Length: 116
Image 1 (tube, rainbow, N blue to C red):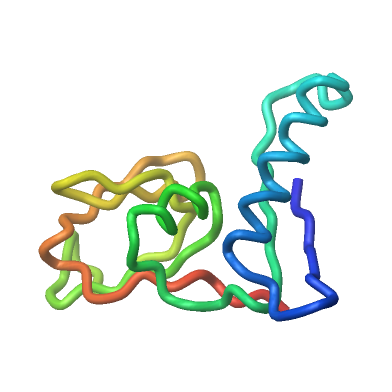
Image 2: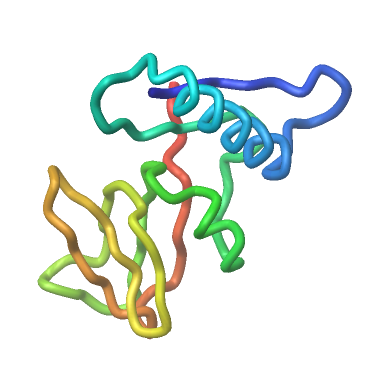
């Protein structure tokens, strides 16, 4: 489920998206209106940028990202997929349900995918 939000008083921030995600997830789970597992994606025009902090990687779990590497990994220097997680050794993406681990030492940039 994708929800686009706008903060009418200022630029929409990561904190705005995080607050909405927590509130909406709790409400959806309590109401039990979606019978199957779902991915909740909160997005805004104010968040198209690179991910750098642990907090951003946690907050944008499940979001589509582009990962660029300094050297090829499995023959590629650009990867696109849904962000699963990041740990001390790798960043994990889902591509069509397949989990891919990209070594952190190769990663030069992780960018949220801009949507039209």
